[in-house]
Image (cartoon, rainbow, N blue to C red; front, side):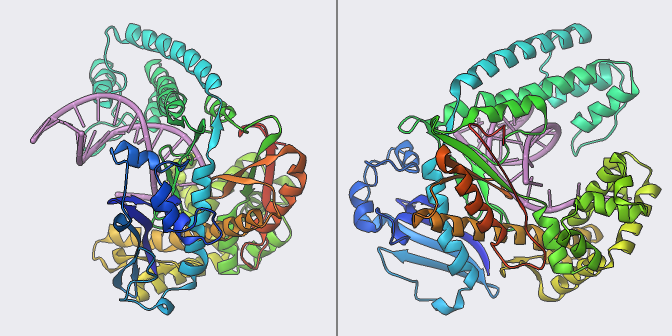
Length: 504
DNA sequence: GCTAGGCGACA
DNA sequence: AATTGTCGCCTAGCC
């Protein structure tokens, strides 16, 4: 089954979770159309802000549809529940897979509740961050203008290109479709190979401008007045692999990698001093799924023994003992581990690690020599996808991959990469969705005192009463680690604090 | 106001 | 040609 959309439409506007859950979940106090019709617009239901935004202040029952758009056995299948009718006539319920009834439909209520819960933002902290970032940006801009000798729009790649390549005479490192690239890789290359301080200044400017414009200044505007919290959307059909996506605002790309970016996470806080934010992360879930699928002896063994997988791979590939692995060897192994999941080539690995292509090829060759099961899994994924036309995840989610039928070599290579990646990435999404449903069930039945706030693909963020956090942590770990039965253990790391930046 | 392109944040 | 999947900000050009 290919899931395209789950949602309901009210007055022609689509809502994917909140309203659908009100109607579909009999346990919900706001279950049913009566509730919806009588109080839709007067209650504390977040998606209603969209309706109000469209100037709509009343609806009629006839305007409510629940719609499911899928593709099943190659046929388009649109289902509509209109005014409580159960199923559209054109398809029998038994045709729908367990994935749909046992995972996607129950998840609707989970997502609805996450959207309803929202998260508290420390607006004052962001305001002070904005001020200091604004000052740094102003000073960077001054320095850039002084160096260049005139003002220009630093935010414009086109104008920046003129400055860098025409006025400063710097080397054109790579082209974009329409011109000369000024991306971070290019600027770093230029910074390394010239004495000109401009590329470095632009890099600093870009980092700050990105953080300030996209997060520090934008997030406070998204605080919903009635609740004082941020209520993002978690889109159930946003990603073709089965992952969720998040928007308005996107809470799945909050910075963490750089020190400055990480500061933004301090602004995501628990509702009060009696609560904490708890983050629970799957450790290397995609690699574990790879091990589960390919049953490679060495890979499975490393996970069963609880080894640091990147270190274990580095030891294997370099033929050294675990304790003799150097930091460089480990980070190369880490890059290969991720590269394998994406179908990275020796060329790509060499570029990302900054090593000769021959060296990268030798590393990859040795990798497949040590883990022959992985090679077989990759070949098998591609062969099956070629035969059936789709890649399939652990719960039976299918992604059609027509690229493998193409006569274009690049298209075929792309099809081969996504055939493998979809199985791994999509199965990880399946695992996470199962865990979310199980945890939500515990919350609804009073076994677990927690609110689920955010999902970031392999991480869940909860708000939990400080007094119960130890107990809750155990329960959440238990549910996540046993979301689906696998032949390798799933491991979950948990941390908590009053904010989303610190932990434990 | 809309769209495309470049860029960059995350897993 | 060369690594998967997203969303959003900004510029630039067009209506």
